[in-house]
Length: 407
Image (cartoon, rainbow, N blue to C red; front, side, top):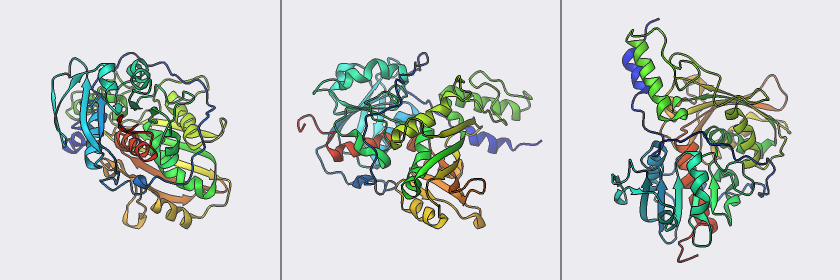
C-alpha cells in the first residue's frame, strides 16, 4: 500500500498541548449517584444561545473579572478565543498556570496578559473562573474557589464533578436553567456534548425511548501525549522506519488502525468512556436512572474533531422531513445532508467550527420509530471551551453570574 506522506502528516500535524498543567495521577471518579435533584430541562432557550453560530453575543451587563486556569493549553486557548469572538463582557482577564507557565505573556484581545502562578486566593478574586485542567486539580481546588458568598463561579472542564449530585452538568441549549443559584458547574464529556446537540431537538419532537451510539474519536482526546504518538508513529511508518508504529499511550498502535478501547474496561463489559455517555445523557436530559443508552467508543487516527453514528429510538412515529426541519432550526447545529453532492459531516469540515454537523439522516430500517444519523463536532470547542463559555453566558442571563459588586 502506498501513502501520500505529505497529506498524511498534514492531517496529524500542528498538535498542541491539551492542558496548561501536567496531568497528575488518574482522578478517582466522584460519581456517587445517578439520581439527580436538578429540574428537568425545558424547551425554552436563553436568547444568547438561539443563534450559537454567531460570533458575538448580545449580553448587556457590567463587565466581569474572568480567570482561566490552564489557559496555555489547547482547551484554555480555545476558551480565550471564544471569549474574544463572542464579545463576552470581560473587565479584566487573569490567566493562572503552573510554575512552568508563570511569567509568560499571552496576547489576547484584552491586551497582553502575564500568566500568574495559581493560588486559590487569587482565583477567588475573579467573578468567574474557567478550569481547563485535569480532574485531580479540580477536585483539590474547585470547591474552595467558589466557597462562600465571596467566592467565584467555577466552570470545570474536567470529569471531577460531572456525576456528583447537586452539581449541574450542563449543555446550555438543553438545561441552562440548571445553573440558577449554582456556583460550581460541570462541563460534560466532549462525546456526550457533541451527540446531544443533535439528539435533543429530536427528543423534543418525538420523545426519545432508547439510544445506541458508536463513536470515532480523534487522538487529541488522549491529550498531547496521544497526539504526539499519532504524529510520530505516522511519520515512522510513512518513512519506512517501521512497519508498525510504536504505542505507549494507546492500547495498540493508532496510525492506520482503529482501537475499540477508550478508558478502562468496567465489570459490565463497557469502557468508562462508553458509560460516560450513558450517565451524562441521563443527567443532562433529565431522564430516568435506568434509561437505555448504549455506546461503543473507538479511537481513530485523526487529529481533531470527534464523529458519532447514532441510532435513536422514539416513543412516537418519526418523520424525516420534520426531523430535518428541527435540526435546521436547532441552535448550534448545522445540517449537512446532501448526499447527491457528497455533502455530509466529516472531521475535516467540523474542525474549528462552533456548530456541530449532522447528516446522513434517515429512518432506521431495523427498528420501529427510529432515526439514524451521523454527527461530527470539534471536541475542543463544542465539547469543551465553547460549551463552557456559553454556560457562563447563560448564567449571566439568569443572574447566577454577576460582578461581585452587583451581587
